[in-house]
Length: 103
Image (cartoon, rainbow, N blue to C red; front, side, top):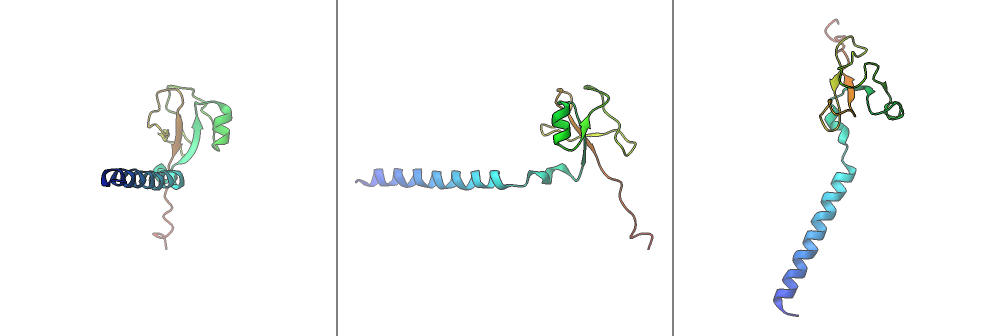
């Protein structure tokens, strides 16, 4: 085998190893770190989906920012960062407990 063929095989093997490492990271990464502790409230992507996510179907329907249980407008927590395309997921941030300040 000549040197050129060995170098090519080594580069291919290295590329396969790098691909496997990256794929393993993507598969095992905890993507919930991007939800900023928002609580899931509702979805416009169907009642079954909303219930599977632990929420409800948005009562206001698509195209309207729903009011969340914390009496504030919900925030967009959709995976595609778009809450105007009809498959919208909405949530809210819990109120901060100031128990430590009152001690």
